[in-house]
Length: 629
Image (cartoon, rainbow, N blue to C red; front, side, top):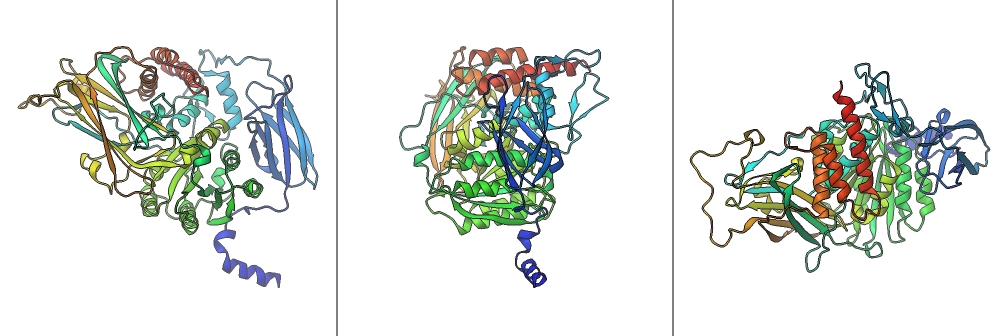
C-alpha cells in the first residue's frame, strides 16, 4: 500500500519532491542560542556559528541570537567573530532540542593591525584577514604570483563589460538620455572584495551604484509629482577647469503604516551552490528580518528551486510570523539550479493571488548560478520581460562569492520592473529589507527617464559619469513602451555630469569624436545665454501606462565651493574612477577622496559614510601593495 501511495505522489507532485535534499526535514530539532562578549556581556551581531559535521553555518542577528535545525546528537560547534578568540566546544542536542545556549567569546589580545607577509610591507589588514576566516577558505587561495600576499579568487564570478562614457561635443550631440538606477549592488559587492583583501575587478565597479548607495539631503517633493528634482553646479575636484553638475531626485516617503498591502512571493535558491554560510544561512537571516516587519494585511508565499521548483508556503498573513519563520528555518541547500522554472512558478503564484490595489512583487534571492533549463542571460531577460507587464514587480538579492553571476542578476532586475541588491552581511540585509523596506518593496514611480539638453553656447563638451548600462536612444524618451527604472518610496537618485565650458581645451583622447571641421557652435538663441542645460524627466504612476513630463532649467554658475551633497557624491565618483583606473580620473587620488568624504560626512546617522572612508583607506593600502608587484 505504501509503495502505491508513493507512486501516486510521484505522478501528482513531481515538481515539488524532485528537489534534492527535502525542503522540510521533520526529524530535525531546533537549537537556539546567543553569542555575547565575555567581558561586557553584550550581544555580538554577525558572529559566524558553524557545525561542519552537519554542514551548518549561521550568523547571529542584531540581538546576538541564532537558531538552526539539526538531528539529535553530539557536535563540535565553532564560533568566529572579528577581534575575538575562536570558540570551539562540543554540544549535545537532545531529542527535545536545545534552547538558551549562551556562547561567550573572549576578546583577542592582538590588535587589528596590518599583516606583513614575507619581506614585503603591509598588503592586508588584520580585519580583512578575520573577514577571510569568517568567509571560510574554500573559495580563497594564496597565489604564488603575488609575493605581497594578496588573496585571489579562483572563481567563476561574472560581470558585464563596461565601456565608460566619453565626452560628447554639445554642438554635435546636445541630448543625453538615460534611465534612472536606484540600485547599489555594486557598492556592497566592491566592499566585500576590499574587505576580503583585494581590489575589485574593473567591471564590478558601476560608479552610479556606488554614488546611489548613499542618501543625500535633497528637498522633499511638494505638489503633484511623487519626487523632487534638485540640481547644483560646481567645480570638478579632479579637474578644476571642468564643472560638475549634480541632478538629484528625492522620492516621497510613504510611512510604513500607509503602505498598500503586499502580495509577496519569496523565490529562494536552495541549490547546492547556496550551501555556504554567506549564502543560504545569511539569506534566511535576512528574510527573517523582513518577515518581522510584515503586517496582517501583507501576505507571503515561498517558492524554492533546486533541480526543480516547488511551493513550500502558500499565501500566509504577516500576522502568522511563526509559520513563515518556521518555513524559512527548515530550508536546506542541495542539487542543481533550475532558476527559470522557479521564476515561472513564482510569477504564477503572484498572479493567482494578485492584489489590485496592493504591492505585487517577487523577491528572488540567489547567487545567480542557474544551470538547469533556461540559463542564458538573453533567454532569462526574455522570460522576465514577458512577465513584467502583468503588474508584478521584481527585486533581486544576490548572495555569496566565488560563483556570483552579477551580470545575470543585474539584467534580470533591469528588465523586470525591478531592482538588484547584493547582500554581503547581516547589516546590509537590514539596510535593504528593514531600514529601506518601503523603497525596496513599494514603487512610487516607474519607467523614470531623464533627458538633458545642453546649451552649446555655454557647454563645449559633457560626460555622464556612470549609467553605461542604462543609456537610452534619444527617441526612447518619448516612447512610453520603452522600459526604464523604478523609484521606491523615500529613495534618492543622483546623476553627475562632467562639463567642459567654452574656452577650455579638452584632451582629444577623452572623446570618441573629433571636433567638426565645417561647423561652428550653434548660433546663440536670444534669451537663453545664461542657461547651461535643461533637464527633462518622464515617469509613469506604478499602475499607469501613460507618462508624465516635468522639466527644469540649470543656469550657469561660477561657484567653486561644493555643497555637502555634491562634495560627497564627487568623492564617491572619484573613488570609482580610481578603482576602474579610468582615463577620466584626472587628478583623483585616494588622499583627495578621503579629504572630500571627511569634509562632507555630515550627520551620518547610520554610519555609512564613515564606513566609506575606512573602505577607501583599506583600498589605498591594497593599491600600494599591488603597485609594488
